Every structure is written in C-alpha cells, then in structure tokens.
Image (cartoon, rainbow, N blue to C red; front, side, top):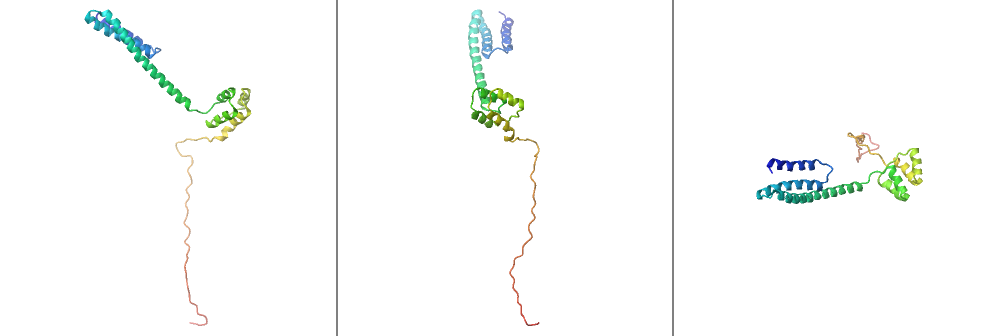
Length: 193
C-alpha cells in the first residue's frame, strides 16, 4: 500500500465523519478513531509485513478509544443541558393567561393560583372576550377578579437614561437676628437739670 493511497484512506473517512452534523460525538469518535487507528496500524504493520492485520487491530483500538472519548463528551453536554434547563425552570417569570387556565384545569385551588399570580407579579390586561374565555375554561370568578385587579396593583417601572424627576431645591433665608439685652436707667423726678 503506497503512502498516497494510505493518506487518502485516512482523510476521506475523517472528512465524512466531521461533516455529519447529525451524528453524536460518540459516533464521530468511533469513525475518526477507527480511521486514525487503521492508518496507524497499517503503518506499523507494514514495517513487520502484516499491513492488513495492523490496520484491523488499529481500527478496532481506535474505534473503541474514539467511541469512549465521544461518549464522555456526549455525557458532559447532557449534564450541561440539564443544568441550563433546571436554571431556566427555577426562575419563574410572569404568568400568562394560558398558565392560569392550565392550573385551573388541573384542579389547583383558587388560593394557590392567586398566590402564584401575586408572587410572580403577573399583570393581565383582560378584554371582555378574555374573561368569557377564562370562564369557559373553568377558571373561577375569584381568580378572574384577581387577574382583573393586577394592572392597578403593581407599579410599572420606567427606565430612562436621564432622570425624569429631580426634586426641587429650597433656599431658606436666615431669620433676622433678635436683639436681647438687659438695660438699666436712672430717672430723677422733680429735678431739672
């Protein structure tokens, strides 16, 4: 087997495996490891006169090693994805109208639904059609009243680059000084001077 044939035999499977985006890392590792192992085994085997046997042994060892490495990468990605999903689920955002319907249809009590609405600071702008739809879906009057009250309950925050309101500055003039003193005088009646 000449070196050009061996090089292309190694290159083609590697390119095919790397180009398949639908393959898992385990599958890619098996393919690439097998191709590299076969090439390496063929080179070592050609030195001893057993090219085919070296290629087969190298392909087996390479495929096994590549598969193990690829599997470890797949498991690591699964753990990372699970952690991200758990973090996203742990941060409840505001509820939507369909969330309320879902809870009502799962027979969650009104008190729990109302607590959930309040704790997530959910704000609903219900139209008449929304109210009718909620009743048709089995949402109680108490929960609908809570939903209707939410726009007035939570203050809206306004963020801007410049301050919207600056407090007035008051200048207080000091009060005029008050003179306090003690005086005495001498008066003599009846004498003229």
